[in-house]
Structures are given as C-alpha cells and as structure tokens.
Length: 259
Image (cartoon, rainbow, N blue to C red; front, side, top):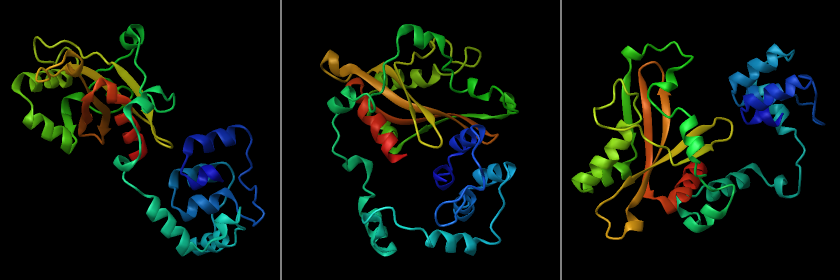
C-alpha cells in the first residue's frame, strides 16, 4: 500500500515477488489499488491488475475509501486544511536549508563519494552514446545536447576564456572518440552519487582547472552533471553546478533535496 501511494514500482514488484496479496485490506477495507488508482499511478495500478487486483468502480469510490482511514496518531488527526498549511510552510527551497560543505562531506548519507582509479576506469562514462545501449534509438538521428542550469550558464559567460575552454573540454570529453573533437581526452569522473527515491539518476562530478583563482587549492573546480535520454530525439547531460571540489557534496545534497 505504501508503494502504491508513492508510485514506487520497484518496491511493488518486490512485494509481489515475495507473495503479496493484491486483495490484502487495511482496517478500513482499503487495498493497494485504491491508492494507486486515486493518485493515477498507472504503472503500479497495472502491476496490481496483473497480479490479481481489480479496479474500484470509479475514482470517487477510491476517494471515499481513503477518507474513511483512521488517523495513525494524534498529530495526523488534524484537519485536511491544517495539514495543507503545514505542508506549504515546510516546502522551503533547498538553498535555505542549513547545510555546510564540511557537514555534507563527512556525512555518509550526504557525501558525494570520490571514485578510486579502478572504479573510474571500469565504468563507461561516455554520457552521450553509452546511454543508447539496449534502446531502439538510432544514434545517427539524435541531437547531442548539453543543458546548463542558469547559474552555470552565467558562470560560463563571465569566466575567462581559458577556464571556459577547460570546462568545455570536460563536456567534449564525455563523447565517444569517434565524434570527440581532436586533441580532447576522455573525461575522468572524480565523484559519483545516485539521487532519487522512486526514480533514481546519476550525479557525476569531473574536475577542471579555474586559472582565474589565485590559490592552487581554489583552482580545483568540479562540474556536477547528470546524463539523460529524452524521448528519441536528444541525448546528453544536464550541468547542475560549477563549484570547488570541497563543495561537491553540498551541491549533490541540494540536488537530492530539490528532487
């Protein structure tokens, strides 16, 4: 039922593999499909149907059933309007959270782990072409796109030419050798994390040098990005942030909180 509420197809599949009963009911007489059907989580609804469940006669029936649920605690017994106000006040932008680079780097759950040389060399990080494996997309008919978050774009426009060129080489180095600009080496991935709850995606970080910084320690910058495949027309990356390597875990945490 919790998986059905959250459109968590992966967990729902595991439940059925372990013998879950699609007709199992809560004390209020609800089944998992009451939740997935009401919230229009079609993938989980179809999975429940494939495993013996049956749809409510209409959506209003699912809503009436949900309204009959007994509050789990005194706190959850507040009125619906009050609950909405709490939710709205809690929906703060990720940037307002009281995080620090040092705390994120030392927290196992928040840290963006640094890859060993072996880990980095054993994985295929050519983000443009490798994402087409096991798909029916024709690589000759797609656009290779680099999307920049607004702050990354602004940084590019203000960076000195050499630093901007170093940044562009990171993006160019994610292409396979056959289409990469001559003289550009394959990009090395410095950090990697998986972000997301029901749908996960990679956040990767690669180093480059910012020559405008006076101190050597400040020159060690990273670009944080995620690979994507969009339909059958575009493949590429989304660049989330450009930051000092020491702040990579902070930005990964902000991306995760926003997601």
